[in-house]
Length: 259
Ligand code: NAP
Image 1 (cartoon, rainbow, N blue to C red):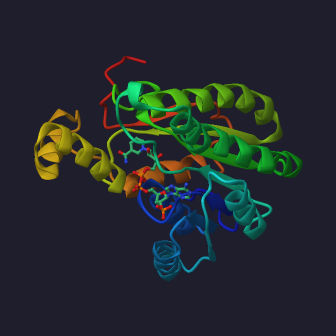
Image 2 (cartoon, rainbow, N blue to C red):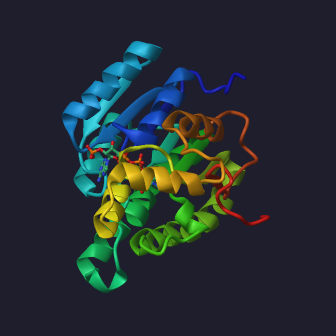
Image 3 (cartoon, rainbow, N blue to C red):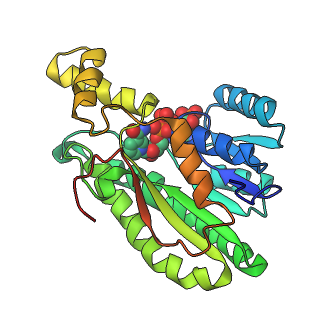
């Protein structure tokens, strides 16, 4: 299927690794020029080179922290007129809510709620003027199925989800859609980091925790960044102008609800 977005431009945040990288690669495979971002320049440049080599599209790498104004300004300066915006950042740490300070909450809100909102604020009016735009926010399965140890994520992402539910309905008549993709367990560094914390608390090895958790996955496996990216590219395609305000779980059926 031709996604109909060849020649478009995209900002993909937090994309040197994992789900952001998978999304940037899938868009680049469709002929979209991508501006990718992450804090560490070396890993980001390596990813940019790999995407360029595989797809031949223009890939611009902008190192910086997307949760800061300066980081966002640098990304927007490199791609001032994006057709597509994929918001993403590192996930908050796991733990017990009794241990989290106001600072911890503000960091989580900055990364998982306020940075995506600031990026939408900076780009959506241009999309409206051009009568076409696609925004995909990478959130988490925790929005529908809260994980007890991920309270910072459960709380902050719920705020973004509520905001998007309203904004998506305001802009769709101008050809701009906004949807959230909710990853379940995908085999990325983030999954390994969470497994490390679990292994430490339980006195097990990371490998043992990952194997044990995999057994609980409905699909019998973890998701991949590549299949996540393909779903993201589809939501950014020419064919999805009537899909908006949705929260799409990519979790291999892990969420047990009928709806
Ligand atoms: P990952 O493999 O650890 O990759 C994270 C990427 O984000 C890296 O490129 C990292 O590069 C970049 N990054 C982190 N903080 C950043 C910041 N402040 N500014 C710019 N770039 C930043 O993580 P992932 O698994 O792809 O997860 C992506 C998002 O999905 C996270 O919010 C995570 O909580 C959420 N999620 C993931 C899963 C899963 O199973 N993987 C499940 C549910 C939700 P630098 O470190 O160099 O900045």
